Amino acid sequence: MATKTTNRNWKGRLALVSLSLFIFSSCIKEEKVVVNSSNAVISLTIPHFPSMEMESDKLITRERAELGEDLFFDPILSRNFDISCSSCHLTNLAFTDGLKVSVGTEGRMHNRNSPTLFNVGWHPYFFMDGGNPSLESQVIGPIEEHREMDLPFTEAIARVAADANYNEKFQRVFDLPVSAYTLSLALATYERTLVSYRSAFDEYYYYGDTLALTNQEKRGLALFKSEALSCVSCHQFPLTTDFSFQNNGLYEDYTADPGRARVTNNLAEHEGKFKVAMLRNIALTGPYMHDGSLSTLSEVIDHYASGGSQHPLKSDLIKGFTISADDKAALIAFLESLTDTVSYKKVY
Ligand code: HEC
Ligand code: HEC
Image 1: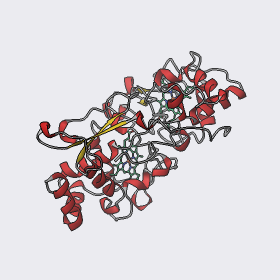
Image 2: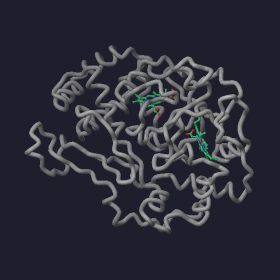
Image 3: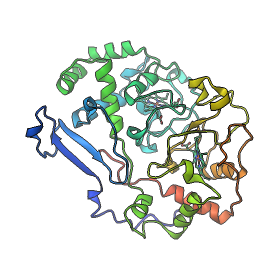
Image 4: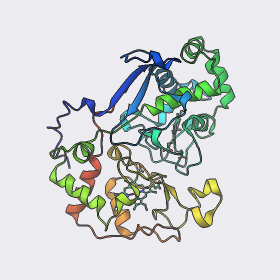
């Protein structure tokens, strides 16, 4: 698959994203363009993505994001001071952990695979079953969860507040003490800055660089969009997901994890339905599916080609198909072209 790693000319494309930096001021009339001002508002405008919706008190500033970043990498938020958010969301694995299912404090096994945090700012709800409504409230989940950091949220707040360094930073950044509101806002702000939008696929598909994909990758893209495979029906561009809940035929029996039905208790309509996964950086985020049960992209394609297990709620789009070895290699090459080698760094 590694036919092409060179010759990707990113020069001159720096204007793809306009990171408009404005003075964060209560007085709109004083708005000015300022670069590197620590309390400037960072507006993430990515031309080929929808706009990132957020409430007016949640604007991204560099100071807020940096404070969130400190917390993201700090084991202070786990009961035994042994793990941080980054233990399961590793930077170099597109914020996943490479394990089948995650392992929390004291080696406790989770039942789900760690998802990428890239582009979480665009998710309308969180967790694979959509059980959490906002990035801010999601923060409480891993901190309190027994199989993750296992620390009551009130204790997490008290710990951070008792740290003189954090205390000073929260006051400076928010003009407020450490609280449920400011702690979750800091982490959520950092997460919103984790954006990924410049894979070779983007260069080809949205910016007209016909050489950005090899012929093999282009064939893979055509297969991905073909009626026979229908991948794009659920994994819609540009984010590679339509965020709907779908049963993609992984199992006949979903008692181990009922998916969306865990939240709604409605097995008849929601059993085995999971949020359509994002495929950006997919080559970095294996193993695959909610339980990490498929190890490689080759296994993923075999699954879809087989038509999956019979389950009454399996989507009609999972109908099976025949694919030659050559076409399978092309589809994998295309999926690998979704790896972003450029925007893989801080936007602030
Ligand atoms: C023990 C490993 C572990 C730790 C620690 C952890 N996470 Fe996660 N994270 C997971 C797993 C597993 C999931 C999937 C859970 C689910 O869908 O039910 C997840 C899901 C998420 C999601 C939802 C993504 C989506 O696609 O809906 C976000 C956001 C997130 N984590 C952020 C964080 C933050 C912030 C922290 C630290 C406060 C953190 N995580 C700590 C393992 C972990
Ligand atoms: C009916 C909607 C639907 C169709 C069609 C579909 N998928 Fe998926 N896909 C999903 C859902 C839902 C998940 C998440 C399942 C889970 O977590 O168990 C998923 C997960 C995946 C994953 C794993 C993502 C991860 O991070 O674990 C890959 C890779 C993938 N699909 C590729 C494809 C390809 C390639 C095709 C076409 C052959 C395709 N999908 C067709 C709904 C669909």
